[in-house]
Image 1: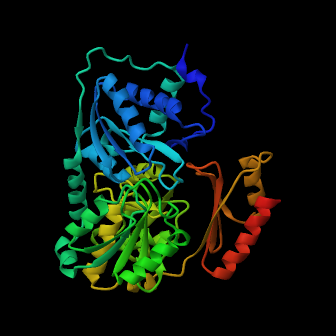
Image 2: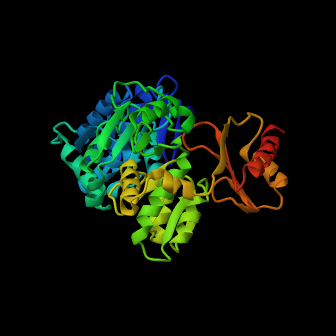
Length: 458
């Protein structure tokens, strides 16, 4: 009897972002075991890195993984509570065969996930994911060894190597000289220790907020301005020069500024870009996804850079960056990607360092840089897909409503019409579809959203 056929995996989200689900609705121990056995089969006899965020389910998933890997002869480097980018960086730095980050990112506490990492610290590509699922469906797992010679050891020494790689990308002396006072809200997650450590090595005074990983999220996990109302009050009270808010696995970054408080996550990447592109050759390429603000083009054009757009998802952005030999990239959800840092993916440590570097190099306050950017007029909405409506039917409604728009089907449906764009696509991480719209004016955005509503509700 093949064990995988005993379980219904229909409630799981399996995508380029790994596998995730609710603990009591499809992603309990039996289902998790199937994926750990499949992953262990792919990694058999090799070194594997494991990191996790602060979710209470994390430790038992971690032990499940360790047992499966040890049984097939793999050695395990455990990192404990670390950001996703740190886990990815350690896979590369330790020359491991692969790794897993146990985190459902911005999803609520009742969710958890496995983010599968391959050699050199990249998330599994489509082919690797297909292999993993194929092993699971066939139930052809590697046999447990009677006398495995595998072992578990701490990979903590590698964590500081990740931090050092970030420090090497900025003017460390100038930042340290400024002695910035920095506020950090880690939502009690994976960045609770590593991010304050980075900041102290940058010579900053750190005000820690929600940096106690006690197994609860003291605010909504996705770091949007709406979720950061109470944190914003604490930031303003701290009188800090700048503040940073993270998601539970610390691969997304949102800023607090003294004048504005919490600002849109779409501003993170353009600000980091401004720091990184100062030393890049004119004509170099930058990759952002289709759902990211045109503020990135605004910044890149000032440096003579060209912006190309990829499908949504870190793995897709990174793939495009590699093929185009891009000097920088990221996603508008607060994800900064510096290809010269071994995480080579969305990395809050990288974003923080680059933005502090921008302030130090130009000897200006963070609000000065935000003031110079055009006003952002963007709306992000999510909708459940009605049972009697397919995505293709939904796309046809949008094509009809925006019949004069330029169209791309690279990732869902992307429409560009005059000074606005609209992106409609299914989520990689939740059972919903997303509609993101941006325009150059608030009034035009309002009118665009009326037309979006018409398509969704008709």
